[in-house]
Length: 363
Image (cartoon, rainbow, N blue to C red; front, side, top):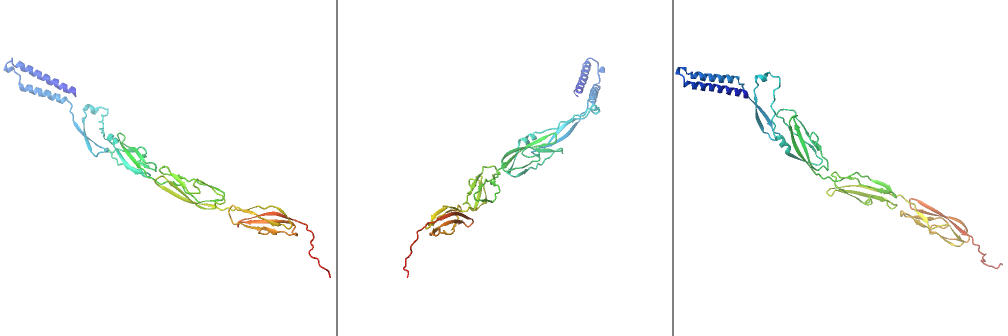
């Protein structure tokens, strides 16, 4: 292109130079020898026409490229001038150079701008994005954590806080990014007490209980249990029979939960014990006194019986004819069980002198 312009300029300069030389000679020659001025002008026009015929023709082709901003619905038109193909370019096998696709700064702005979305704990997040490609290209998109690739996230209690996820959209050549702030607001939930069940034990057994409590928010929880399991352990004895309502309470300082269950301690009867008596020996004519000591750990009412010849009152006045060996049975009955104890009672013979009861005159 530049070489053709230079060539044209040189030719015009030569023609002008010839014209000046001819004009200079005109002052020294006769009028009949003067060249025709019209012929010279025609010659110059002919030279310019020839030069113009050799110069390649150029055409301006308008191409409209329309791009649409992701953030702003504005249409930007750009005009790109492309040279028309020359004869030599048309016959070459080399591919024609394609114009570079214009880019904008809108993708950078989209990346810097942040959208905020607020949800509550335990909510499910599902983002629906509307996308458009001006060139009708296939669009792919994805999200960064905590969202999955489809823009979903099931929050749980304890997830309160702020999270940033990046949405990346691409048509395979150009990429647009947008940051999204996810604000998960705290939702307090009362502590959860694991199920409890009624408990039945026998007297004399040890009961242990530990409440299992969970807090969905992972808050610190205070747990209390009513008596007799306040300390987590209850050693029953033979006076512990009965029913107990056990209450379990848990609080995180704001919300509380309660559960209750029944503790049944079954009565286990312990038979009475007989003490305070032992084998004994007395002489005829002596007073026998038995005083058994009866104990009952259950504090039941005890009925005591003593076999003959002593009797239930425990007192026997022996005579001089009562010598011999006796087995005395003492029985204690608490209404549920009977306990007996035997002792040997020996009444020793005591020889007594004959007695003169009466003297009478025989007639």
